[in-house]
Amino acid sequence: MLKNAMTADFLRSAYGGESMAHMRYLIWGEAAEKDDFPNISRLFKAVAYAELVHAKNHFKVLKEQVGDNTVPAGAVFGITNIVDNLQGAINGELHEIDQMYPVYLETARFQGEKDAERSFHYAVEAEKKHAELFNKAKESAKEGKDLEKDNFYVCPICGYTEEKDAPEKCPICGAKKELFKEF
Ligand SMILES: [Fe+2]
Ligand SMILES: [Fe+2]
Image (cartoon, rainbow, N blue to C red):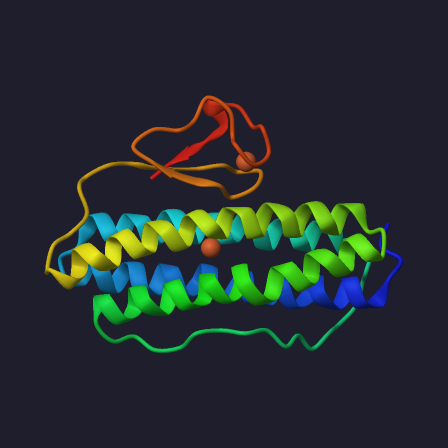
C-alpha cells in the first residue's frame, strides 16, 4: 500500500506520460505505415505496447488511491515526417531516461515505496532500449529506408523490447521467453 503523497503524484504523472506515449506511438505508427515504412510502423506499435505495460504497472501500484486527479505529464506533440516523428520519440524517451525516472525512482526509494520503485525501475530500464531502437530506425529513415523486416518482442511484465528474437529470460524482470509478445 502506498503511504507517500509525493510518490503517488509521480506515479500518476508517469501514468499520464506513458498513456500519452502509448497513444502517440500508435498514431506515429499509422503515419509510418501510410508513408510506406511498414517495419518502422511495427516498431512504433511494439513500443506502444511496452508503454501500455508501463502505464498499467503504475496504475496498479495506485490501485488503492481511489478518486479524481488532474494529472500534469510531459508529452511530445506533432505529426510531421517520419524522421521528425522518430526524433520526437527519441526526445521523449531520453527525457524519461535522463530526467524524469531517475528522480521518480530516487523518491520512491527514499520514501520506502517498494512497488513504485519496481514500477519506475522497469520503465526506465525499458526506455533505454526504446531510445536505441528508435535511433536505429531514424538513421535508416534519414536515408529513405525502412528497417529490416525483423520481428519485435516485448516483455508483458516490464516492457523490455528486443528485435529479431525474444531473450531466454528478460534481462530486466526475468520473465520467460514464452511470455514475450511478438510484433
Ligand atoms: Fe519507451
Ligand atoms: Fe521483463
